[in-house]
Image (cartoon, rainbow, N blue to C red; front, side):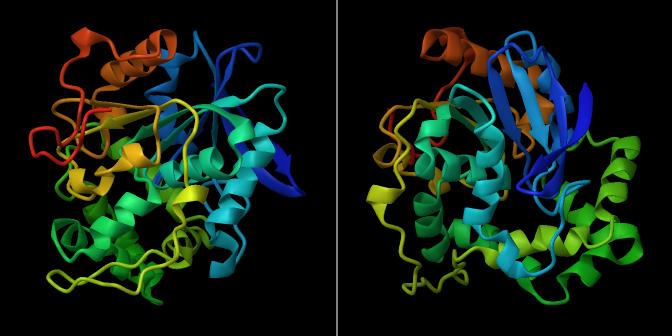
Length: 313
């Protein structure tokens, strides 16, 4: 792995990379509460094929951390990554997880000239996700933590006692055998950088998406025009079916917005599939990119298929 600070529109961002620079670029976008180091498990499996690029995104790790919720709107987060993508002479492969998936979707939807293929690992397109969160059902209940993260005192609450409550959230209901104490110390170090946790939570506060109370559907939804939210490039959705935060219903109907969609789920994984079954995730990505279709030997393909929530592409 190499690491360096780079300049994006006059601001300093920290970028990790794996693989030779003359290989096709793969932009790898982390989610909450991780940072660019989140890809250290997966990138070695991909760097013979790609030049893997993993920035600390705005407000995370060692990258620029402006104050104010207004600095964390999706358009600004996408603009940061578009600036990286524009440095290359060819459209990029883009991989996003969790909040990184939101930025990856934003790039594919709003800057399609910069994205050749889109890979999402347990992340959600805004329209199916908003519909599920607004319905007042299981996804609404699973998303109540978002309201907790949006509270004005959330940073103080989750940083107390050396980030004990944030660690509980990180581990709760998830398979985190990969999360060793040494790695947990590294996360705490990144979270403790001045202003970082407040900035990380501002990603949630800046989002216009609304979360219904369980059993109380919401109708006051943000305007999400379908014609502007299309993913035209080939799109692979990888899914850890044991995810407790993002449920299969959060991706129902994704084919409407991504006509060239392939779904593959990775058995016995949850939200942290890129840490839990690294080889399987890498194999699925490489097979799909090489063949334009999933490897038939890689297991079940469609998250939610058994529940009738995810139609075949």
